[in-house]
Length: 185
Length: 165
Image (spheres, rainbow over the protein chains, first blue to last red):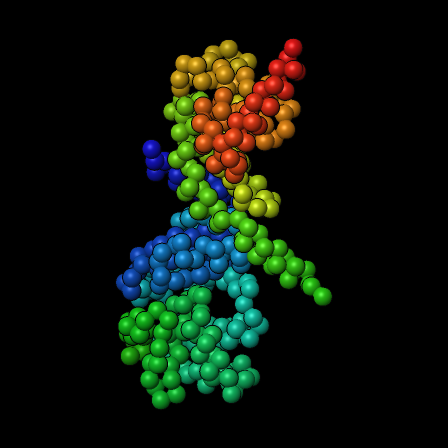
């Protein structure tokens, strides 16, 4: 016997409405493939190209608490802004972010990354300079590679000093697609 | 020295190691909880009770220190919710048809009877005589052996007999 959809949905909605959820998540469709999206009451906590939820639940629980629940409502705002972005109708995101558990250097790099404008690219070295660590280009590359909130934190806009795209945790073809969408390629 | 924030983060992490994420716990037990509630309350009333059971579980989840007996734990919550539903209805004197003929009276009666038993014995008695689970199933729920489950149920029943005579 399975649990009827309406019953399942109503439990999930009630749980969120009663503020009992540490992190809500869902899988949403996008032009570059399904995305795993998770948000806590503090803000957007994760976007991943690996859309299999089971890969993410334990890490999210370690960061935010064990009340991790699939909950489309919890990621409503993020989904809406992502849809607008992919439709070419949004150039900047107005979402608060949950960056708990990240080292201070990572957070400062991500804050700088968030300021790289739509349709522009920068380099790992330039980003390193802007956080006051001009020789830390490689460390900046690592931060990009482990970025928990790609797309919204636009690590796809960071390229090598020679203009090579270099790499992307979600696969180079996705980096190309995002930069093309923004008219940067 | 630990700052408050670090201490909190550490606590969150320790808890995450000990407990499965709620989603996994919910997916694993929701079908059985609904089945049990339908059997005791009938299909209609089971739906509200289902939601209430998992909301209670979710509310208490963060306070759990380990995930050793989650099945027995959630079945006990479901049991308590079902008893509350039946108690609320009783004063009106308009009891609906129960899901099955004989499960509800035994079940409702057990709730009162077993109130003061030690938790393990109470769980074993309720699961055996209220939910009609086998000792194998009860053993799995309690994380013990079938013999230990049988023992807990029979000790519980003896204790109840002593109390009622």
